[in-house]
Length: 252
Image: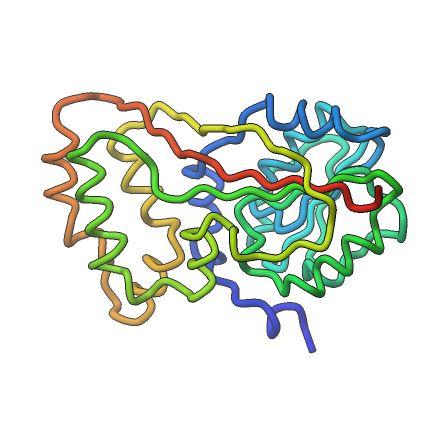
């Protein structure tokens, strides 16, 4: 059975937009993760998407392998020295056993078969290796904009979210991880965005794409006027996403 027959590929349609509109992760996060690892030779970014986290890891690690089950995401991933991309399920990586210093999963763990993935993590991890995964939910912009975005999220496209989205809403609190936890720092993603960035970002949501697929129309059209009015005359606004970070020692 092929990778694509097993994977719910909600993001291929907007893979290029995904690379443009998704927020970047702070450098300090990767510096902190690297400081936890006895060696910084090889990192595996699983569910790499556009390769954003994989590229960031090259500043701390000698080599990074990014894997994703979506060929479209891999085809659109950021090309960068010392980053190698492979199309692979999280549960069946191409990595050698006991080879990896750090495993990261950025905004993707909720798509995985958890038990099978953690088994794969155990296989590829070196002694003292670290697993870190994180997610972020709805952003904070302003009360007026946030109200329109919340209406869009819950009422317009709410029925089109995959069931896995519940893990994001629960901040991964309901996922049992069989490794030793490491206290994680608080972190907030921040961007300066134009109105166009916000509309583009809403288009990367899997529920938006599923709505378009089912109804043959873009649901953003239902809220764009209200969103523009809520945005006001500002050229740019600060957008913040509170992050949930969970970190573990795989083999103490």
